[in-house]
Image 1 (spheres, rainbow, N blue to C red):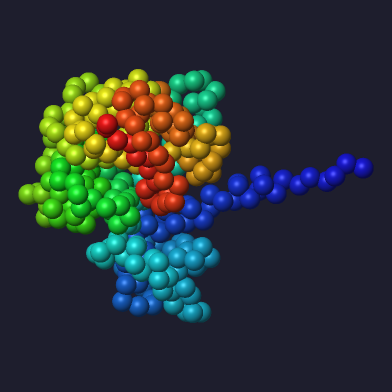
Image 2 (image 1 turned 180 degrees about the vertical axis):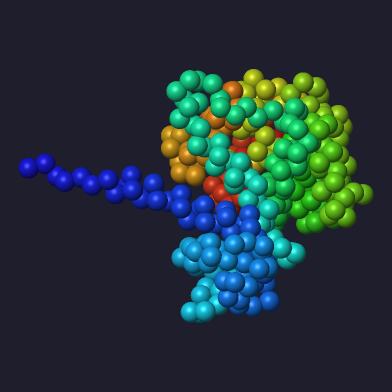
Length: 332
């Protein structure tokens, strides 16, 4: 008699989406902020959030079920995590990430179509983004970059460096974190002109305009101006083709002083391509969003860094929080 095999993995994965969507709805509707001063009943939460009371109560109970709220039998309150990270106005607020989550999840729903046809269902072009899409894109990712930068700056010693370049720095979150942690650093953020304008605003809001210099640049078509003793590239290689990556690394190499390190931060697959799990599955977003860009393996990173002239290449395996894992290489 053959062993009975049940679709437990199928059902578990199929149901895994519902808690995530409950969180998304709670973030989009900002249901956590009304509870900042203490417990409220469902009607009061709905009134404060401007939502339908009869529908809101079911979402609140779902948020209790996933551990983001508590319920005492009549009133709802935030979990300690939600109170810290999802209450608008607090220092660690990340509620605006719902913009990124919705964009990513909507894209993932089209992965099957992309793989069937070979044509990405949603091509991402940073230079050609509308101002509305660009604003939503970076509003959703700024705090991720900021958190990754804070983790990185807390684990690494930048005391001996003086001139840092944040290559493809996006909205400037990583640069802001570095400036906060290492006040002596002179920081340059280099990114496309359309993105640089977004970075300037976030940097100004952080009160760091005098510390972080924004330099409009296309790293895959032109040399990087200036000379630096340390460089960081976070999340850039996964949105470039292999040939663009080779060009970008060569341009960074020529802008570094001898002995200067380059930190390639975020989303590095093991050589099996199946681990870490979150990266192996997140890679499908890149399949759907880009014609020829992916999350790449450690071996591929090592090859491209070596081809550009870098030596002493190593990989950090300790932390993947906020995609703050990295590889580091040095210019001889």
